[in-house]
Length: 576
Image (cartoon, rainbow, N blue to C red; front, side, top):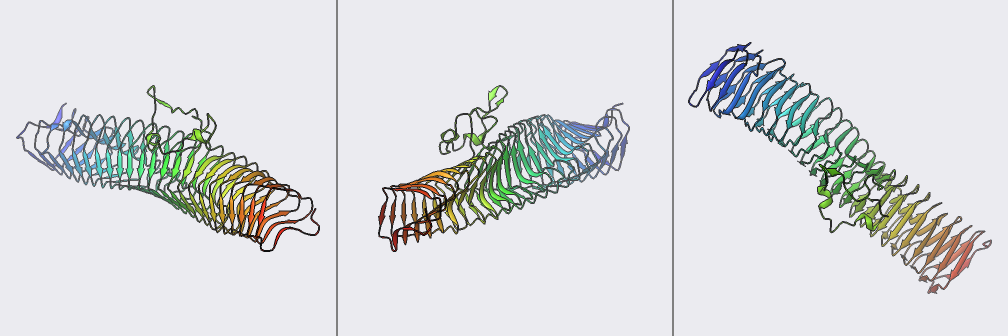
């Protein structure tokens, strides 16, 4: 009715070898009070309690090459500061292969834990060192860490189970150098205020997410490799606030990184490459800080801010993505928690780590957007070689685009459409196409530099409503082209372009106080244009102003026209 074998007290050193310990009432083997047995090549099964119980010390207990199975019971239970060494054992068909709790600290090396409900469960401040173990075909999880437990898993292999790792209810732990592969649902779940450390792990080929962090969990995640996972490589949601640094996220069937449902986090120097939809997607009240990452060659957008997403995105390299390098859609920036207050945690306002860092340097959304609304900030990024457009804002998207380098986009460097609002300030545009505003898009273009743009530095299409000031356009094909929009263009410098300003097709644009110099044509006014040009300086151009086409309504007022190479004003035959 009790244990099959009891080994107790310091100095007890039996050798248990090649025995079968089965069908006992309380359990198979109990070792306690610093006993020092050697347990080798035994079979423990069908005992009605745990097959092995270790408590109160036992650092010199060696459990080696045993077979442990128990149906609905625990294989090994280490508790009450129990220790011991477990090496090359087979755990199978247990409800829990090994349970570690109450500050127990065993050392497990090269064991196989398979076909259990949970391979290893560390609970209630349990610890333990798990080194080079293999977990396979477990029905719920390979590893579960809860309630303050803090184990270390090093170079383990966790495969073909429902989940690989569950860390929840303030669990901690360090996971270093593990191979996590081919699990049936989300491979790693971290939730409920847990705070683990994940370093140098390979998380691949999961059916759903590689990792999901939720419910106010935190944690530090460094130098991990996520690839070929199903829904996303990593998903962060519901108040989670991790630190992600120097990870590789590539080739997911969905997104590389999803931050949603008021998720937070700080993401530094990660590589997000080759995912089959978006590289990074931010939505539904999320507010991450994404800094100095590489978002390249994703099949969707490199960065997609959508449906109430917010955040600070700075010093990233965003290049060669298939849909757009940056896409802002679906009322992005109009956060569901837009009152400036963060969701409460245990009755107290939450303060995400991302929101407290560099707050003195970050431009607050209140400076750029109306009260009650927030705005994502895209700042000091390198956005290049987009296969379509560099930055796209559509479907009432909102964004501040500050101090970026945007270069060599196949289509527009920045495209604003469908009622979206962009603040584009202090950026450098090189090569490729420039900024395009259309379909009731609103854009504040302030203090940017356009250099060597092959098309128009700025193009206004039907319904566009920009304000454009203090910009410099150098060596572009066209400095500013207005083709049906209405806006205000003032105090810009347009130099050495083929055409400085081109206006046509029912536009209603006011152009004043600009410097237009060294162009082939300073201002080209074409059919049906409605333009007011006043107070500008036109100097050293081939021709200052040309008018060509019917239906022109143009007012030239108080301009200074100096040193044109050919003519000041040319009105072509048929112009009226």
